Amino acid sequence: MPFLEVLAENHVQPGDPARETLLRLRADRPITLHSVGMSLGGTDPLDRQHLARLRALAERLEPAAVSDHLAWSSLDGRQLHDLLPVPFLEEAVAHVADRVARAQDALGRRIALENVSGYARFAESELAEWEFLAAVAERADCEILLDVNNVFVSAANLGFAPESYVDALPARRIAQLHIAGHEKHGDALVDTHGAAVAEPVWALFERVLARVGPRPTVLERDRAIPPLALLLDEARKADAVLARCTRDAG
Amino acid sequence: MLAELQREFARELFGGGERLAIHRRNVAAAHADALAAIHPACLSLVGEEFFAHCARRFAREVPSRSPDLNDYGAELGGFLARFEPARALPYLADVARLEWLLHRARHSLVSEAIDAARLAALEPERRAELRFPLAPGTGLLASPYPVDRIHAASQPGAGDARVDLDDGAACLVVAREPGGAAFARVAPAEFGVLAGLARGEPLAHAAAEFPDSADALAQLLARASARRWLAGFA
Image (spheres, rainbow over the protein chains, first blue to last red):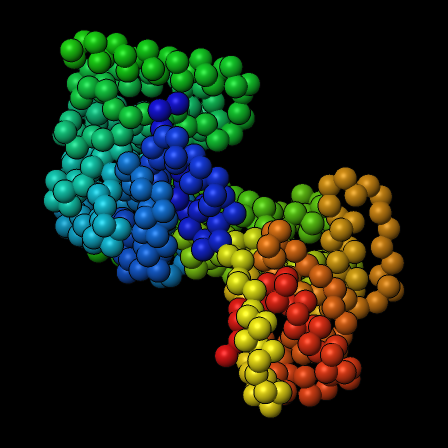
């Protein structure tokens, strides 16, 4: 396992019980910090105290990368603890990009912005999500964490071709990838991280790699965790795809 | 425009429309899972279904204010104390308060021991004027119920331990001790001194009604220092 992804909000308390464990793990391999709490797509003021805690954590762990989502999670001071969709308005590009830029300044590090799974869209949206994400990344000068499963889930739920999404993003800004499993609940695909990676998501993953080259990839699994051997098989499958695209690129 | 659209989204989210059901479930599960993780003894006392009901009602009344869910749930004890469906378990609120204090202690750093030599070198009059703030992870809980025994009996593996509710009151200090988060019983008079110190009172004032000898007070301070209940003195 070449690196570890740490969910930042689990470890921002001053006396984080896992503090020593993380430092020990960090001594052996790089860590990436993955945040779910900056509400970069939101309209509440950026939470300075939270950013200061994230910065302190980043200073302890010296992560290879820091990421959060193209989403909002707080409104009028109330934290909703879910990654909610942004309306893709022209005017919102500058707003979100400015928040990402200010968060990057507060952290003293670049952020990779991750696409979330979409279950609903604002009728008011003027841009496609990939146009919006690319425009924000350009303007904020941030990176992109492309979650291939989220693209697939959003495409199925909202009705677009996943290929048009992944093909449109600027390759040089895609710094990391996520793959995961989803499940069908009623009419919708839900990003549960509770199943094996689906075949069409593997295909989309290969498509991304063929275009942008190998990127650090996390296989996400939080629920219905199978025996380790099965997870390792999936990880090896991802490694094989990465190796193939490295060879093809070379 | 962005803020307006997000407000409209939130109204729909909490309004119960089918379109945002997945987000509504995510929001509810995030809050309920966090409360359950912090309050496992309460969960085992009332069972999953009842706890989930409490959590839903609590989350409706008390929004989360921090992006870190470790900050969510301080008010659960107060909520349970006035939650009609939980009336049959009058001690439940204090078990929740104890679990919250343990959670805070677990996420706090261990304080330094206080400088006993410097303290001993001070004139008694000077010592009486000192303030001893509690360490950030230290909390005090006085319950009319033996809440520490109820907590112990609710741990996995405790089996079918019986607690007599008439065992009486418990005065507890919960803290981040060198070996981890822990709680200890103190005598009511000792609890009174610590509560005074927690309010920021000088030692003489906090101990004004302490019936025991100056030696007993010194012992209490020594114990508080060794267990890192105090942040220091000034």
